[in-house]
Length: 111
Image (tube, rainbow, N blue to C red; front, side):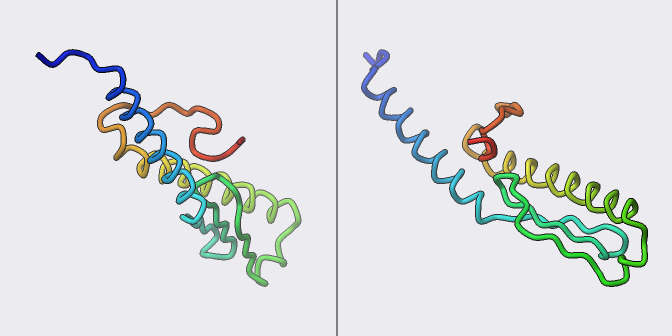
């Protein structure tokens, strides 16, 4: 008769935790790039929601500082959203149909 086995359960939880840690580490190497203003501003963010690269076209320096700031802010925000979705998609394979919440630190940032 197959009842609940605490040792099996703990082993499964340990394997799940190990896989989560491996996936979290791998997310640091995965990146997304947001591009605005016909590629004049490009921001790259990794799966830990860390900005890894910002590129600004020489053409953009003809704009006002405020315009440049707005474009950079928008590109960073877009890249952050895409990086969070990438992390959720990557980790979703572990959890099946369970909806992953926006828990600070779950996907690498803030830890």
